[in-house]
Image 1 (cartoon, rainbow, N blue to C red):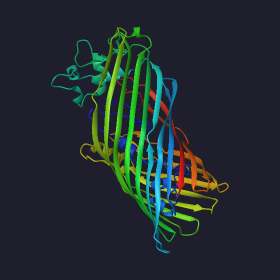
Image 2 (image 1 turned 90 degrees about the vertical axis):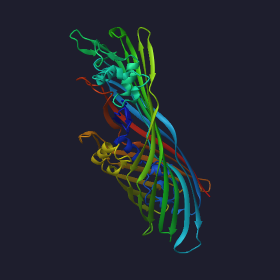
Image 3 (image 1 turned 180 degrees about the horizontal axis):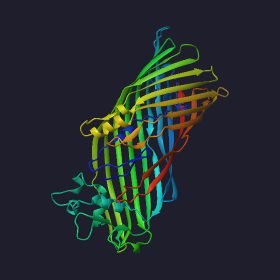
Image 4 (image 1 turned 120 degrees about the vertical axis):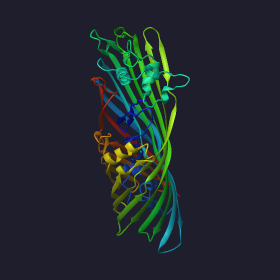
Length: 516
């Protein structure tokens, strides 16, 4: 099985024996907090701050500053945009999806003491820690390269009997054969050349007078890819307040991962009469769902050495994931003679384990009485330390992660200013340094991950007696992320068309919180 699979803009090829690679592990390992509208508006720079249920994911000690109970609910709308240049044509696509960014509850139990431990706090929060939303659409005309030519070329040397199912043989169980090739063969889109059983020609190709093979005419080529879903962290929180200047806490975090990938590609003849094989149209699609769970523990502290100044620190253990991928492929073909074929691969699933690296953070914040505050965080993580559980089966992937990935930094900054005691103006900034590169088995770099920057802003309102608040926040990339990739594999000195992609993601979050 060959597939085009977009992971944060990186397209990977995966063999018939389905296997995860470094990009898949990185997708699960990265954390981009969403939280409440207040924490998102302030860039989630909450390592040294508390008093917000979205901050539980950032620092477990954040609930230690609570003096009463609170409930918060934060719905979100996540929009992904993609613009492509493909075969001299420009196209764009946009997708908006609803998600729950945060829902949480905290309660306080006072000890009755005047010094030492003054109170204990117990909290629960569901925080979205990463969204995988992504959409790409590309369309253009090409008369030089075809996906069917690529598939046919990849089959050369394989006897056609290995593509045909018998009572004792299933080609989909043969790990050396791409699934697209089996589907194309069954849909009569590739076939053996004349007087041969192991060299192939695609339906979009004709024989030239000199015996060479090439694309017969103009093809409209269309590519669409969409990823949606994310990771949600369920935190069971405990914290304590010591002398109103030192707060410490811990989370037991359960992480639920669920995302879906859908890829679609098609070619149709602009002038069907140009094609000797009566080719009119082909379509192929790939769908995959990844789901599972992981767990980790997080520890944090906040210290107030002098009035107004707060310092914070956290440590998060590695996260241990158990995941399942389920996938299948489909392909259809249409011919001018009226023939139509529709084939589907079997549904398959694969279970695997990933251990993602520990991370730590430091933060400092300064509050200006009731006027506002500023806050800055630094977070560090070594992505080269993550690994798949089966060391034998994933030896290559684990080595590629050690060689290609490395230490990455996250800088978060935020500010909040109260205009009249009831309306707050907020702003934030996030910088994610590059986690490294994808490398092949020869340690050649195949893709450099870019650093990413996000800006955010929002408003906060105290309602009624001030125990109810309503907040809104918006976050977006500073610059669209830019990648280039081939629509399919090049073949026989034929270059596959390149898709030039610029993508962006933005989030709009609302929070209603009630203290009691």
